[in-house]
Each structure stands twice: as structure tokens, then as C-alpha cells.
Length: 310
Image 1 (cartoon, rainbow, N blue to C red):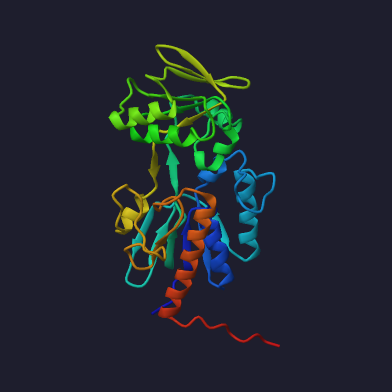
Image 2 (cartoon, rainbow, N blue to C red; image 1 turned 45 degrees about the horizontal axis):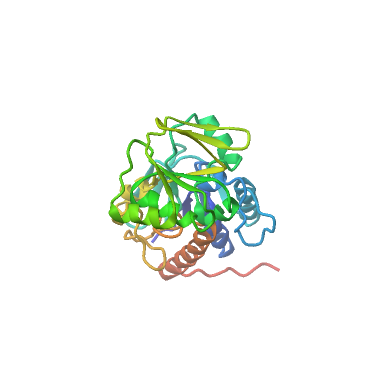
């Protein structure tokens, strides 16, 4: 079997993709990382639960450090949006508009995108940077301890997120985004038990202020220290579907315990896979995936280091 141009192409330069790149390069494998520049980690103003960073670190700061570390070990990193993955008999063909390349293995670390509330993108990003809008209660629920918090959502997703955040603050409101709440009896009972105020939408306007964020509905105007949109997310599984990989019922990418998809040679890690959407979890999956890729390639051909010339 002829050797492909790259041992592995990684699609996605977030925490999962960069961790895998570092591992694979340290296995002395040829790695190409293609990054579209839209990692959700870059949204994080400051992460306080990323181990090893007392005082926290910004998402962009973490990605910058990881890119530099990958570069130290010779990982080739290019900017681009991969549009095609084609599985061949012995290799994959990957293309992002700069000409196709071939790889023995592909790791998808394409992540997901949270659905945003309807508001001006620039205002949204400013509010996100200021901590007025937050998307991950697991990541930063601690930062809203005893503050005024609103969750924009409804149904079981919205009720569950509000209930989770209720362990951080007593001032909790669940606001329906589009009209009257769509809560079944169990969700309403949960809201009542947890002391969660219910406000019908629609949300006519979400307006960042100097030190608060205002949510306007037909019935009232409310101000919060932070709001959490609980509107769902879109998993980036287009390339996996194109390659013929099986998807889970929730729309994420199915993998086995070693991060293999149902397509031989195609692997996945991070938020594109069902699991805890956390940096540490993505890194752990990436370490498993990279080691699996190395061992699977070793079964196809000997990975033997040539002797160094004296």
C-alpha cells in the first residue's frame, strides 16, 4: 500500500484538534491541521476551570498557546474551510479550495455552534465579552453566584438549564423566546419547586447596558447580570455525513470507545461527538483519538524510526 501525503489530516483547530495534533506529531507522524477559525473556545472571555491556569485564561489565549505548542513539534497548520472528504480504498482525499491532499487518516474536530438570540452580532459579541451573555452553565455558573440570571428558552431544555443554574443563585427567570412557554406539567412543576420565575415571550429586544443586560417582552422589561440562551446548538456533521459516517439520534457523530467513526480511518473528538462539551473533555477525547490513530496506522505498516547518522 502506497503511503499517503499525510499520515493524518485534522479538520478543526479548537482544543480537541490542537491536542490531537500535538500528540500525533510527538508520535513522529506527519500531521496537517486545517482550521476554519471558528472554534467555539474563542468565544470564552475567560475560563476558570481549565486546569493549570490560576486566575483563568481567555479562550483566544489558550488557543494561541496550543497553536504555538503544535508548531514546536512541526505540525503544519493552514487556514481554510474543508468542503470535501472522500474516502478511497487506502486513503482519504481532503479539499478546502487549495487543491486536494491525501491522508491515511482523518480526525474530525469540527465542533458545534450555539444558536444565538436574535440581536445585532456586534452587540452580541460585546455582551459575550463582558459576561452579560453566557452559554455554558457548567463552565461559568460559578461566576453568576447570587446574581440576577435569566435563561432564554423553554421546554425541557430551558427548564433543565434554569434548574441547573438555580444551584448558583436564587434570582432565576426563564423567558420564552418566541411566545408563550411550551412547558409540560413536569417542567412547570420543576420550575415551581425550584422557585424559577416564568415569563412568556417573545423576546422583543435584548439590550446590553453598562453593567447589566435588558430583556424586553410584551409584558415587561427585565434587567439581569447575565443571561443564558438555551436555544440549542448545531453540530458540524456535514463532512462526516459526506464521508458516510453514521450519526447518532441527536445529530452528533457516533464513535466507539476509541473515537473511531463507522468509516475506517475516520475519527472524531470534541463537541462534534456526544458528551460533555468542555475543554478538558475534548482534550481527553483527542488524546484517545490520536493514540488510536497511531496504533491503527501501525497495524497497516510498521512505524519504525530510522537510525540517526552519527
